[in-house]
Length: 73
Image (tube, rainbow, N blue to C red; front, side, top):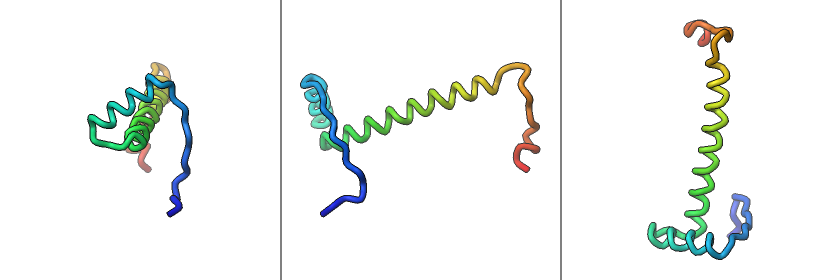
């Protein structure tokens, strides 16, 4: 049965593939589901880094501020 979600193929070095297979076995998950989980975690971390940089830039002294109540109008 075809899937609605796009598929991707990746090539790993043998050592990386072995680590992924070992981890998936220990966690009682398929290798592909663990790979998907790890990719999603990596995306979240990168988003956090980008959003943190934006927040630090906005939190600089001398920047224009808006009162809390005005921000939600």
